[in-house]
Length: 160
Image (cartoon, rainbow, N blue to C red):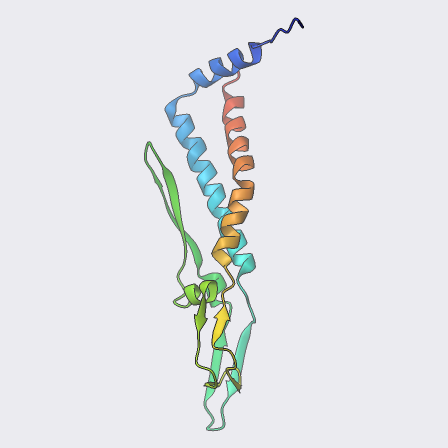
């Protein structure tokens, strides 16, 4: 049989450092991490929101129709930080009335004329872009690194 020994001094040091950290410090770590995760979500959502610029179309009767396709991108926002002992959260949302249709997909009437496009619709269903799913996946990919970075920052402060 092999003679195996383990050195647990690193774990003991970590336990001492963790015991010195107050609950307020952990709350700050959670709040900072949630704020950073919300910004990752917003950045990803804005990057995946389509933008075509301002479109203007003059109809035969002289009416001018203008749309600003950056409205949905600019409508992404985060609410206030809500923190309790058990959870810390920030609501991230898009205030554009049509955001859910762009994200999830929608039905439309085939053959209907759309003036701003200058043509008739040919599909009965428009597939969604799943912007929120992409943003959620970006948060999941970066969550552990963000949490570790925030914990290390607070642990460094208590290492004396």
